[in-house]
Image (cartoon, rainbow, N blue to C red; front, side, top):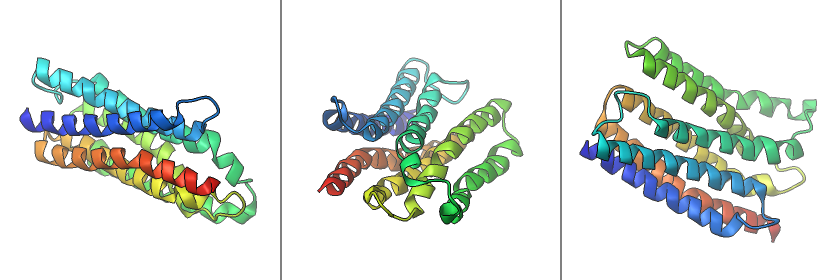
Length: 221
């Protein structure tokens, strides 16, 4: 219990910092919706971690049944997805043949997570609950990481914003791998690996918004 509790406290504090940092800069009228979505993603992660902390303090476990906190953490990827797909991708990609190779290369990220799901969850000798939760997490990560990889490699043709946001997109890809590995660790009740993943995810969550703030400032100057 102590390792799980420590892991989620670290994740909660770092994600809350990112959410508050983003809120200070972007939760105002006429501020970038793109950055607001990212801040809300970190808020989702913080909520999920907080729920895990409460469950651990009240029941002593988080691996025996489906937890609401899991959906908070998984839901963070929907905001990462919305930030790229809803506010930026249509400005970058005109769907012409010129950019086809980048769209195809970006499929590598979803392919990796689908393969991981098959190997680590679907065909593994684990409880059906974890196969379902692994599938839910895979669905969310597939949606997000396609655009994160795409915008990481996409040419900076007209807007100049792609280059400024590449560090952020790289961080989200690491975040996705870390969260996915944490889900794997929880399904095996591996407290040490869970702690390592939470530390990695937490550090990335704390760094993400400062990179966004710096990137958008650099783009506008």
